[in-house]
Amino acid sequence: MKTKSKVWDYVLDYALVIVGTFLMGVSFNSIFAPNNITPSGFSGLSAIVSYFIGLWTGLNVPASIIYLLINVVLYIFAFKKLGKRFAISALVGILSYSLFMEICHFNFMNIFTDDNL
Image (tube, rainbow, N blue to C red; front, side, top):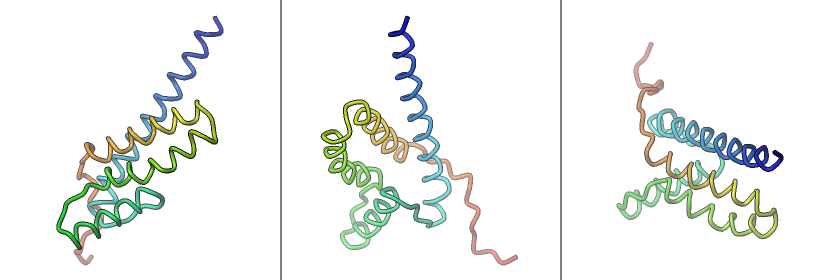
C-alpha cells in the first residue's frame, strides 16, 4: 500500500508542475509578450536575448528555445548536486515550460494600449 501512495505522490507532484508551467506559459504569451513587458528570471532573460538576436541578425529565435538552452547548463549542475528526484522534477518543469511558451498563444489580455483616457 505504501508504494501506491508514493507513486501517487510522484504523479501529483509532476501534474502540479505541468499545471503551473502551463499557467506560466499562458501568462508569458498573453500578458508579458503582447505588452512588451519582460518577466523576471530566465524567461525574461530569454525574451531579451531573443529580441536582440532578432534585432541584430534578423533571425526569429523563439524565447522558448533560448530558455531551454539557458537551463541546460543549470540542469547539469542540479542533477549532480541536488539529487535524482529534484532533477527529474526540474526537467519536467523546464521542458513543459518551454513547450507551453511555444504553444500557448492566447492574446486576450492586451491591457496596455496607447489610448489616452
